[in-house]
Length: 380
Image 1 (cartoon, rainbow, N blue to C red):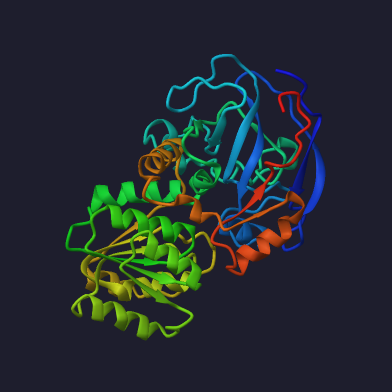
Image 2: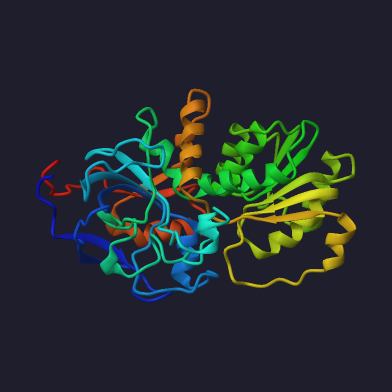
């Protein structure tokens, strides 16, 4: 397997609300069942911004190496014959992505068979102590034996795949729940709140689901342009249509005064949850995927009853959703430019700039790019 470096450079979140610092972290032992991967791309997520500020509903742990949406190249395998979730044999040099290491022992893992609901959520990649080397904002990631990995298809580029690491697999999981309960019909209108990665992938799947019209609400204009490319019939720019009542009226005008059959909250703004109900017609469905903040809003329960609406909450995903998202990209990459999701790349040492640009909405999706960085390992 060649020589493995002793240490990895990593961006460490030492204190909430403070800039991250670059440190050398010792690479853990490659035990049976574990994998060492060189980080190729590590996506910057809005969750990383909230995590660094201490605004997540998940209890913050510091110090930590952030980065939970990572594309890596296998450097070392702790065992022969390791397989990905699709039962494909892994080898050094393969490009892989990976889910959080769920416990495999709780009710949600073993009985419900929904490991993304596991009680250990929040102890996975991007949320734990630096010595575990389980965060993408680093040169290497140590993948433990409880982690399910997914091979990236050879035809899919790094730029096309990186959005699967969080946003796309989250949307695939959410749409599975939505379609089981309330399938989108051919005459239906879908309002997508938010034009970040989760909103853009939601726009794409809504268009592929056969909706009569998809309306994407968000900003800035660059993101809304991509929403149009990916299937939005109408976009509403919140930088131009600033008032809540005016956005609601635009939706009503487009739906013969009734409202939309579906709304999808993908913005992450707590107030957007309230606004979403005003977009809905009666007997409608509201899929909420963006609310990771612990901030509260005041809600009138009678509104839910008057609309006779169903609200579906969905968060995160497991390895099968990575697999399905990558298969979708592989099948449709000839007519959808999935690489448009990645708008900027940064050196590891520029992590604080990358996080600030995501906070300000300057990037659709930024990523730490280590592909030109010397890894110092024998297979290079």
